[in-house]
Length: 343
Figure 1: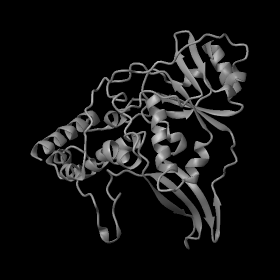
Figure 2: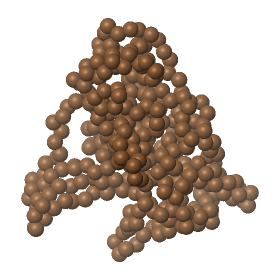
Figure 3: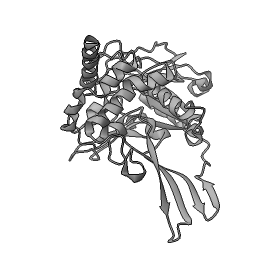
């Protein structure tokens, strides 16, 4: 069922929803951007529709709501271990574009369906989450969600289209009908983007012969001189899930403290370091290869449905060296074609 609400009525709706839900959406933080006098748009709890940035892509994805950059898992005192408080039983509503909703499904596979193991900390939050889909029909200059088949979704409870004087809302989950009692009904059908602004040719890696040749291909050497291994791309990525754990110790004996889960990056030194100082990937090019092939080959090879990358373009947006993910994937496709010809 559809409804048309003025912005005042949307705020009244927020007041009703906030009794049962925490509402998260892309929010602008002025003067907190990477460069002087620039803003940053990241997911945060919102109280009114005016807080939400609809017209721009968020700098960081909604995964921050479920897996914060730094998250305390539990506290320990001697032999006693106590999980971080779970007293807040409110459910969560997240405003997100289709690509980001699909990205969360990719994360679900990693955290909940990976070798028979479920990450309980992730699961506890994920079970509370429902999405409000933001209509996105044009995309942005670095987006390639159509190619990655993440431009459409039906995984939402409410869909919204922003108008000049209000919003159209399509309520899909009947649990939410009660919040719209007395509002003006008006049907609307959610539309999706149909053409990428940044066309991409996905590589067809058919066998291990091609993969092994691709791993050693000289195309990766370009990134030895370009990538500065800062990890900005992976932190901004909506599907990267790598993390490390750190113990914060409060006493000199190491008996009292807390264990944190902290986002990690395969681009940053030490990520793959083992005992004795052995590292699997030493150069920036090797690290780039690892990330890119994970996004457009390894994940799909393992799970068999979609590629891990959803084409949001945030990695390109955040790279201080202007490394384009679309250009990189196209270069991989060219390298595969070259290997096929030689074969």
